[in-house]
Figure 1 (tube, rainbow, N blue to C red):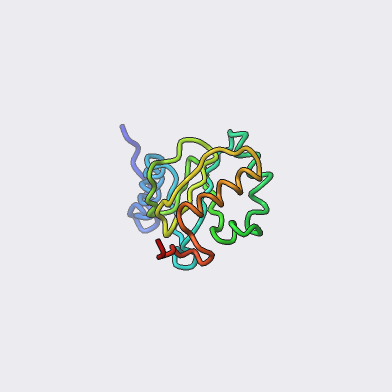
Figure 2: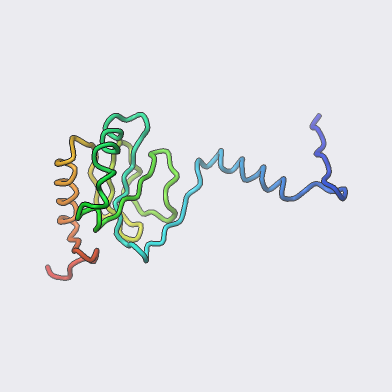
Amino acid sequence: MPRPSRPAPGGTTAPHRRALILGAVGLLLAGRPAFALDWRRQPLRLMAVTSRDCPQSAAWLAETAPDLARHPTGRLAPLLLVDIDGPYPDGLLLDARPRLTPCFILLRQGAELGRFEGYSGKDHFHAALKALLKDTDQTAHGVRSSQG
């Protein structure tokens, strides 16, 4: 037999308690909650999807991530670090959910422009990111070139 809920002061069950329980159940079913980003402030971003259990992710986080904001490519596409299990930003338009880590996804206002996976050193990472920026025709202002 279910146990009756304890009434809140005033004699009724508190509605906020029910909402809290339903919210917790929703989080368990849906995973971690998403979060919002202001894409107007910085429309171009590099989303790095990592995993705690991945040695390549750990190497990238130790060797490359700390200096990325000072690198020209890091200033063009600021870092957005996400765990493979989430949470992910609201409204992402990805070609596919990342399956391998680390995975580096270039985003414009939340839409995927391109990606590369794996990490084999700082020089290789910067070369791959530079090639991705060139392949997706990004300029220093984060705006696609209209020349073709």
